[in-house]
Image 1 (tube, rainbow, N blue to C red):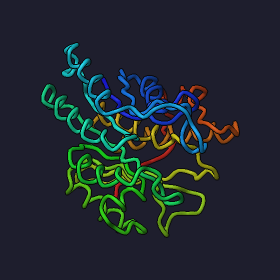
Image 2: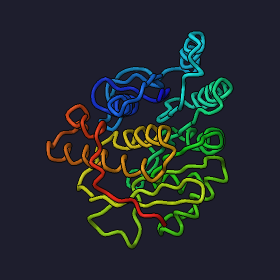
Image 3: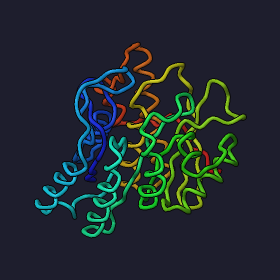
Image 4: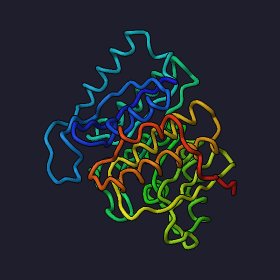
Length: 282
């Protein structure tokens, strides 16, 4: 599979394309990264260097790819952290152009906005643009539970509420929804879940909850799920592979006690997921 990945880039550490490209490559995919920012490190450190990339520069890169006659080769477009508010229209137009050349191409949007603990950490302009402009043209979205609630203006505290919010998201546009970091009253304190819905079929996977958080894990999750689903069209298999790889990556990072994901050190888990978790159909 060939995946065009439009998202942020950092030199130090692993978020955005710096988290997505290598795992996808180790899983066997060709990846063409297009950066929306070029930062020294992720913004969670409190300071960083480097620019946001103007939408005109992003479009110029897309134009160059088109001139190579490469659009028909693209099986999926993946977008993540968008940087400036002007990037949304550039992504939507890119999706339109690529799908005109290859109608089978899928567009996967990771609607990066924030999380339940931190709230929104993007510009106030970004969430409405994602909800109103970008998500409606997506085939796949990969929000965390907090982002799903925002996109659909829904309560998502219970499984029933989360499934209802997924249905509302599907009515906006995407057929396939992966919800990460799912917590509900029934979830054991030492577990965390992911929910994947494809049309009317829904699957839930539970993995041990490690007592820490690292930036970039959501970017790896969105990338791997997009790659697996584009390759297999099997939401259950894609969920199981993704859960396996991401858990092992996080466990390796936790054991190493590092501030950044142990991406390179964990490369074999992307190429050969252990498949140690089952996905239960709801």
